[in-house]
Length: 300
Image 1: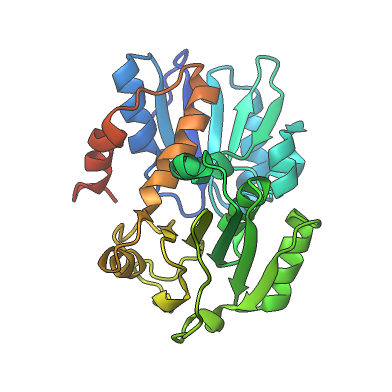
Image 2: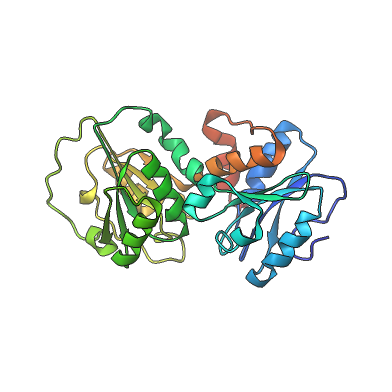
């Protein structure tokens, strides 16, 4: 048994897990075990608390475990794990962060980033349309923002990245998409109302993304005045607790389309699940049953 794992070791049974510090709040076991049960796979998915100084020993151990299919990686390990792996998928290399590790039969480990694909999944119907112009206002410059910036830049979206340190925001844009005509601003820019007259947005795509923990339970509120959102903007908040954030409530009241944090969480998990277990998860009715499970009071 892994001393930091939440389940006993069952020899011969394939498993994957999520690692992080802390890890008790992770919804990944509920998501993956829901799909495992739906497909009738003889496997399981766990959570494992790995402190930063334990990461090298953890990787050395799972390399030798033929039952270990891989792991999802949460903070603070998404960048620290990279030197411990044998290969990096090109997208993970570009983003500079890994959230999924997969073990090959010979024990070699490959790092992937499924956050980018998970983030884009609910936007695909919009992005399938040809636009005259695409713009995203992204709030936050932390780890989650890296994948979001890379994903949107690859879809020819001009980005306005807002952070407490505009210099950090500028450096992030230059690192992830050096050829892009993007802009960095102080996050306070969006806190006060604006009387800016937006041009005709017909044929354009606009998205507002909260990629920060602001607005999450226990965190300071996100100060964003909706007058900064062009008409018809999609408002996307990756926060999952609470799920209906104040930003999304404002957008609902204004009649704007919204995307909540479970969309990205489930989307990135689906891509990882297929890499771990070799089958795509069953996804029906907008993941409604899984969403009910994840939002039930018993879920952390």
